[in-house]
Every structure is written in structure tokens, then in C-alpha cells.
Image (cartoon, rainbow, N blue to C red):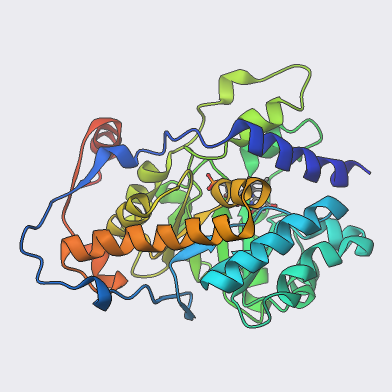
Length: 341
Ligand code: FNR
């Protein structure tokens, strides 16, 4: 079964390839405040995304489901989500829609975390009926629709026709019983595309920039005639965030792409994000760490974020966007060339 073995390969290859780290956050620097008048104990990580209340800005982003082995990964991720109060997205549910025998590899995420924020996930080829089925399958609080043109083009068995996406998303947004988030999978979203998507009534936009898990590399590992020249394709996470930040009053922006510590989370929030998604980082914890180690690592992320907040004199996450930052290097070059101030 092609789809099932692809799911397993993606996990193995994503794990081997790791996060590239060229997300651009090294170009973003906070301006230190030596008299912050703050207290660590007063920092709050609560936030509102797409009208839902989150107790952490961190989302365990969409990865898997659809094969027996992937149920174990979703089981572990669901425990992380429940124990640390993180929202979680399951991977694309098309596998379960096409083959209901795999449904349990997704529903495990709801069974283990009945009260957590759980997101359904499908590609932009989905019909309204499939979108409704995905939401119902896991009693999702939010629906993610992913855009992955470059991944599909490099994937040997991938789609080659990308017409009609905006119409399909609009119909899904209209019919969905929950807020809809549009997401990239690691090639970023530019201002123009974000502007079009924002007019469709979506609740959130996950820019999914490059600099973390690299699907060009992953799909190339699955090809005989490699297309290595595309390994650097796309907008990285900071470039993409700067592109879409002007739209943040109308749509909640999520930053995903190579994020792996609390300082990077804080930087993402300072340049327009309301929350962050992390996938590769959690995959590594699920595959490599004991449950205890993983929960400690997640609490460290929260701790690191609170350190930044305290140092800057910020006690609520919504104040992070007003913190001054200095942008240098390639990110500054990108912003200048694109006319972003
Ligand atoms: C993904 N990602 C993903 N996204 C999506 O919307 N649907 C999916 O089914 C998958 N599948 C998937 C499998 C694996 C193994 C990984 C690592 C990732 C993409 C993911 O949600 C995220 O956008 C990217 O991985 C970038 O984030 P990181 O990994 O750099 O934090």
C-alpha cells in the first residue's frame, strides 16, 4: 500500500534529515532591557488563536497517522500534548478517509487527550465532505488544510495539478463546524498568497517556512532521478513571518519551520506570530526520548520563553509583538528587497 509505506518513510527520513536550522532567527535580536520591572512568576503563556483559548503558544504540528507504526508516534505526541497543555495536529487524514482501517492511528490522539485542543489535517485537494469527515473523526477543535506544492512536485507519486485551491478552501471554510487554519509544510507563504488566503475567512495561517524539516530533501531521498537543486527553495521562517505580519490584525499567524527553543519562539512572537508550530522537534522526542525526558524538554521550552518575557518586562504573550527587535543579515536583505519595514 503506497500511502502507508510513504508515511513510514516520511518519519524515518524526517528523523534522519533533522532540522537544517537556517530559519533566519539568528538574524533577529531583542533589545535588552536592564530595568524590566517584571517577575518570572507573573508571566502567562495563555493565548487565543482562531478564537480558541490555548494554555501554551506551542502547537505540536501535523505529522502522522495512516499506518500501524504511526499510531505509536501519535500516542506519544498526544501524551506530550495532554501533560504539557499543548495543542496538537494529527497528520493528513486522507489515508484514513481512503482506508478506514487506519482510523485508529489518528483517533488515539483524541482518546488520550479528550479535553485538549486537537486539529484535523488534510491537503488542499480535499473536498468539503472529506474535510467534515476529518473533523468528525477526531472531534477536532480546528481544521488545518496544508499547502505543499513543492513537496508534491518532488514526490515521485505526487500531484501535478494545483488548480482550484482557493475555491476549495473557501467552500471548506464555509462548511466547517470549526475554525480553519491554512498551513505550508516548509516552503513558506509570501504576502500575496497570504493576502488571498486571508480573504477566505480563515482563522489562522501557519507560514510553515524553510529552515527546519526539509521536504525537498526528504522527497529526493525517495527519488531515483534526484532534484537536489530544490533543497534551498522557499521562504525561510523569518522571511515568511515578515511578509505576512502586516495581515496579523485579520488572521492569526502561526510560525513553523525549524523552531527548537524558547528564544526562537519568543522571536517568532515578536515579529508577528501568535503561536508557533513544531514538528521535527517533537518527532525526535517521540522517537528518541523517554516520556519523562520529553516532558522535561517541553517544560524547558516554556521555561526559556518565560525567561525572555521576564527579561523584556512582558507578562502576557500578546505584548510580545510590541517588543523592539533589530534585524540583520539575510533577513534584513530580504526585508529590504521586498520593501518590508
Ligand atoms: C510533516 N508535516 C506535515 N504537515 C501537514 O500539514 N500534514 C502532514 O501530513 C505532514 N506530515 C509530516 C510528516 C513528518 C514526518 C514531518 C516531520 C512533518 C509538516 C509539519 O507539520 C511542519 O510544517 C514541517 O515539518 C515544518 O516544521 P518543523 O519540522 O521544521 O518544526
